[in-house]
Image (cartoon, rainbow, N blue to C red; front, side, top):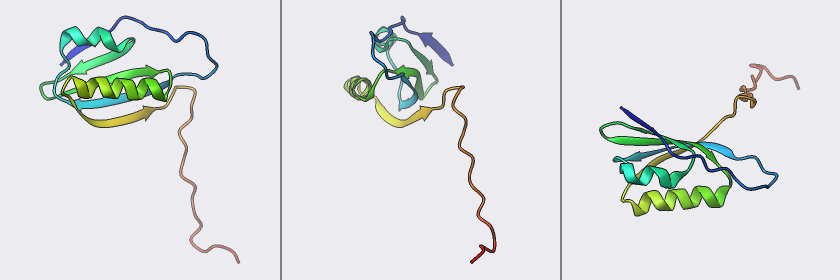
Length: 100
């Protein structure tokens, strides 16, 4: 397994906090393309590549996905990651015998 960290790239201004994503693609991201993705961690195995990091907005996410497709990589999964400060939503229990 190979790990890369691209050069940092921070958003300029704005009041919306970036959202963390994990993007899994089939295939491997070329080493020379890693820097194009800003402050994104890239983990490569023999058959997949996982990119994880913060994306400033939906337009940036769509641009990142388009660039992956342009590199000939098939996007398998896009997952929004919770921030450490975001609690997981626990399922609400439904009573077996609801009161009338």
